Structures are given as C-alpha cells and as structure tokens.
Length: 143
Image (tube, rainbow, N blue to C red; front, side, top):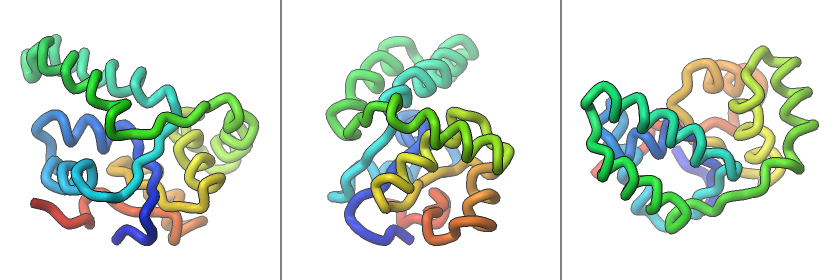
C-alpha cells in the first residue's frame, strides 16, 4: 500500500497504464490518483523503448504510443538524473541491479518516499534491504 502523498514510479507503471498489461488497473488507479508521481528524467527513454517494441509487434498503434508519450510530463514530475548517478552506481554494484533500476531507487531514497514498481528484481532487493521503500504495483487498488 502507498504510504504518503508522493511516490517514485518506474517505466513499468507507465507502460502498464498506457497499454494492456497485467497491472493496468492498478497503474490506472495510481496515474489518476492525487498522489504526486516522480521519476528520473530518463523514464521517457525507457517508456519510448517499450512502446516501440509494442508498435513493432503490432500490439500498439504508433499514434497511441505518441499520444501516451506526450501525456507523461503532464502527470509525472521528471527529476534530473545527473544528481543520482553516483548513488545509483554504488547501489547497483552493491545490490546487483542495473544502473537504470538503481536510479529509481536512489530517487526514492532522496525524496524519502516509496518506489512503485512491477519489476521483480527491484522488488526483491527492496524487500530484503529497504522494505518500507517498496510499493508493489500489483498490490495497489484498481478501478
């Protein structure tokens, strides 16, 4: 469950909200809630890459992908990632995550809030080392 009125979200949340995924109802609930959503500024790159895979496979129309990308900055406060690089490098090396995943964790640490994710590897690391930092997307309410 969400604790507080601010969370960091990862690209899984956005992709799930804008496409048909396992946790789409929970993502939609979060995106449309009054909870402030933060993410590192590179989330658009990760989301674009995921949308491109779906467009190429025929699971998403190009126009829908473009419209979804335009909507991201309207709902998500994009935070500069450069200040997170050093902490992410250390966290990623210590816990075996990718640098990308560690950037989300470090932003949540910096902001003193939870990270909402559907990434099992990130969730496992947080469950073991920072359980209060984790909000598993599948456990959120849904419409």
